[in-house]
Image (cartoon, rainbow, N blue to C red; front, side, top):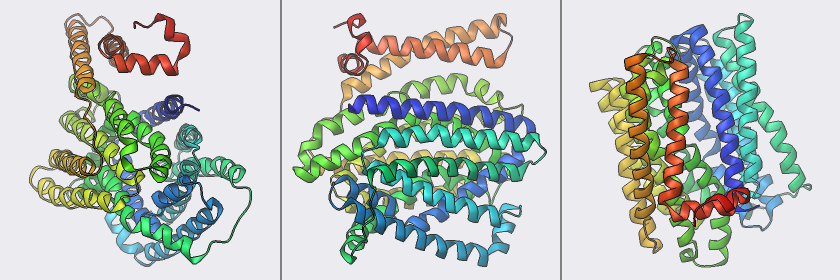
Length: 483
């Protein structure tokens, strides 16, 4: 399967997953309000931090070693053994300190946290195995299945009168669905089991001792602000912040697809040749890393209040936070591409330094700015630390690989986004003046669709590389695209 087609499959799956998650969150927010959502997201954030201890970087190490194509069964078995052992240790700690966990969250969540931790770790293991086996498209398809399973279960339980507990049960069910289906494809690729030797654990450890900080960086980007806010603000405000964050993260989906798709290819090439051999792929990853993030920033700034209003009347107060979080995702989208390169060329030591910079700055800024400015400070801390770590990542990659930043492509995306912004602003002005649709959700839907159409048509006209990529991966459109 071509890389572009793999990306389309993975991204399409991510879009379906996000739409399902959006629908479920809107229903939950309107039925339960912001406070139960705050309890749920605070607990999920806590699990995400605990999962770092349960993986200690082993997921990235599994993907890396399997993608090299040598002794895959042994590395898969070694990685599975490490994940299971670490779950037992971390789960024991949760039970031991269950009183403090309940006091922090404000809800009896110990059993749910242990259950979700188990399925999160198993899900991470399955995804790592699939990526390492070059089954990225399968990994992508599992995303909407997990989200759909979670959404259906949560909605059904809430309709049955099981409120906050239903959120946790549905979360576990969705992940379990992905685990079962993903395991089938893993077993199909690795039908036999081979006992690992000590050297297999050691080689995983050699990569994991650096990559564990990458897992910490990823979770800190997604959940540090929520976890720190848990000490300073109410569950209701955390619920509003979590909704704003989830909507903002929709825009980084394509960047994540590019990263996931390119990793096994860059890993295989760099293992056979010099790191410089992946320079062109690095440039391509940066060319498309901001494909949705750049227009999303402009569109989000214009439509943020109306988008958040869909969730209920208490959510639009997070509009300013929403805009800042889109900036954070823009910086992180590009940083992730560069960090992906360092891991793919087997330089987890340099990735470790980038992640270390992010972790230190993010934690420091969150504590200081949340204390001073509340939830807006949390968003600013996330954006600031992402921006600084982007510069650090660029410094290390440019020292290792000679590549050109695709400024022309980024400028084309920016120009197309400006045209899109003018069209959306005009449409919004007309609606605010004449109230033609008289329905908030319909207004958002129409303006987003119009903006996306203008943006992509404009980009097709401005960017030769974008036209070439579309023509290569969507043959039926080829005759209709300009040269």
